Amino acid sequence: MRAVQSKDARFDGWFFTAVLTTKIYCRPSCPVVPPKVQNMRFYPSAAAAQQAGFRACKRCRPDASPGSPEWNDRADLVARAMRLISDGVVDRDGVPGLATQLGYSVRQVQRQLQAELGAGPLALARAQRAQTARMLIETSDLQMADVAFASGFSSVRTFNETVQEVFALSPSELRGRAQRGSHPTAPGTISLRLPFRAPLTPDNLFGHLIATGVPGVEEWYGGAYRRTLRLPHGHGVVALKPMPDHIACQLSLTDQRDLAIAISRCRRMLDLDADPIAVDELLADDPFLAPLIAKAPGRRVPRTVDGNEFAVRAVLGQQVSTAAARTHASRLVLAYGEPVDDPAGGLTHLFPTMEALAGLDPETLAFPKSRRTTLTTLIATLAAGDIDLGAGSDWDRARAQLAELPGIGPWTVESIAMRALGDPDAFVASDLGIRYAARDLGLPEAPKPLIAHARAWRPWRAYAVQYLWATGDHAINKIPTELPNDGVR
Image: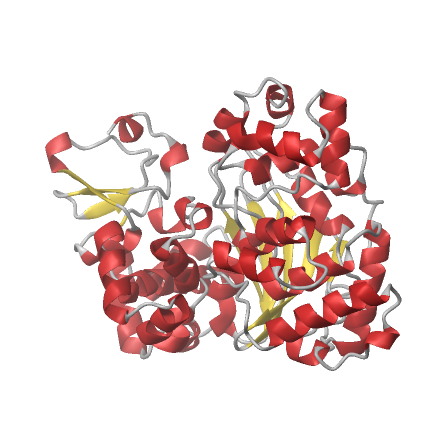
């Protein structure tokens, strides 16, 4: 109740407030005058509020608030299920497909989601479809029938009824309201604003993605980080640009049905659903980290849009420079990646699938035989589906399976856990940059005593890594400066 009275935006996405008299649900930070306590109800998800008969507030737009940090900070059944639902699994494979990926029965999944979120997987997926529909209605010139099917609805009638029920406006009314202040975009491009919880320091987040980017797959151009995306129904290109209160996102997709999935993967890559206040408050208790946090609060963990891709790149980056790792990855992309057209920039390929890489000749790899074995074994294991590095993966199991592969030690396992699995407590204690930062700050430099000291940073050690890395003079900590009317590729 105090969060609602103080209109605290830090709690947006954590819960939703519904008003019995108006039948509207809002964010905690909604600017309207709070209702009487006896008229308020609280729900753990937008889907639960919608299922209870409440519609979204037209002023604070609770459906567009940042997602709950819990789903990216936990590895239990509910969190894994929410990540998979966000990745479109229910729309593609139904609830049975979701349960199969989680390794539980349909009944167990439904019961756990209902108990914690007040809604089952179908209601949660429906809420996501409604949000996707609103984005397409407001940001594209697609015909409404196309919007309906691109959003995952089975019929135009269901689409119309859901939009009216959730937003208390018809699809045409939503588009009319949005077009009053709309800005033109290139044909086939969808422009979105990705919200986040403030504060956010973007330099290391974008700097890391840009400095380690694979030529042809990623680039910095026109003031935006751009990359190709492999999606369930086709491919896409995304351009992401940090703004003071949001991330500007432009998506070009070969199939509009992939919109919600593309947005989810971009949010995950940029760690936009993190709770920086909770992270920084705990880490700032350490006097060694406190000055770093005060100087640039809200650092995020640069993650990935594809766990398998990052695992391959992590092995390519073992014991070599950033430039060498990019070169190795670029050679694989040119040899095995799928070509794409990018009229707006210089992207040329999708990163290769594991099935395509399974055919590579180890003798063509320009590094030691032991690392060739590591790479080919990893690729074969991922191609066979023996290790799950996807959105719904079991973090502990994936860690254990990776550690069993030849040539994959703690640095590689923790790098994959941090950036592919999304574990907020992953810690690369043996990383050279971390050891240099620890030495300069007066922290223990050797991995074992540093790990012992870092116990106090749990469960946010992956964020401590970002603050430590940021002390170094390295390209990963800087967003490139552009020349007028020119891009840095």
